Image 1 (tube, rainbow, N blue to C red):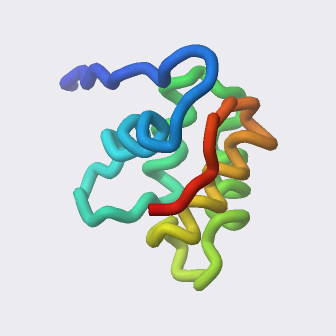
Image 2 (image 1 turned 90 degrees about the vertical axis):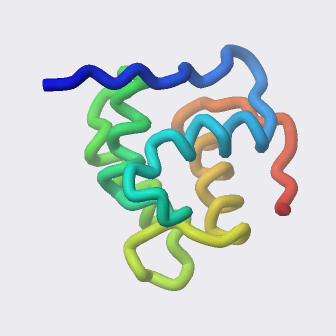
Length: 97
């Protein structure tokens, strides 16, 4: 079994760019979309309890087109808002780009 080292989420307030760069490292198939499993791995890296449950809720909260993945600026913005509300991640701006 290979061990993969991930960059930690920066402490304190996080910019949208930092959050997006941190989350992108969990996009294992490099399709530019975040699945429930990929979000679960991201949450596990933060030692979040019940990561599978919170990942499922995060994807449901962000997935506007109901394709089972977080993609596009609108859905990524929704995921940022979910992380800020429910995971206590402090994001300094909720801009879209």
